[in-house]
Length: 160
Image 1 (cartoon, rainbow, N blue to C red):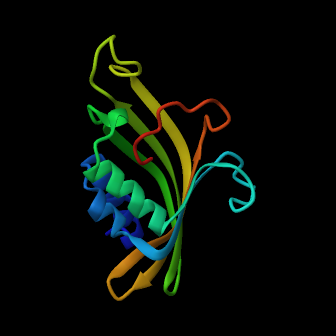
Image 2 (image 1 turned 90 degrees about the vertical axis):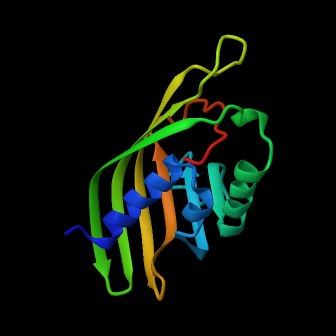
């Protein structure tokens, strides 16, 4: 049987792909951080990042995507996340994981809507720290290092 963190990683991917963002947010601890760095060795509090959010900011993103009209996601992206090379280390009530992610984004549309009708790929190396709570494992910190992070990333209007 697979480790609970393996299941958590796959559950997170499935919830994001299904657009169940409220359920996705519930996977994160109250003091969680979510980081998509430009320089994975930088200090996210001092240096620029693609994204560096705490749980409150993640909740704001979910609110915007789920309950506000957004031109950037009309029509909404369809996504498919593929997870591989998962490695988990557990130490009591803490666990860490590394894995590879390939996110495919497809937005329906035609030539009149810039960027629509395209298929985009977002390959990344991910690390995740999780803590065991009374409600099960929660994501404490997630870092997504995009392979093309030093190139322009246009129209990132969905959750990676």
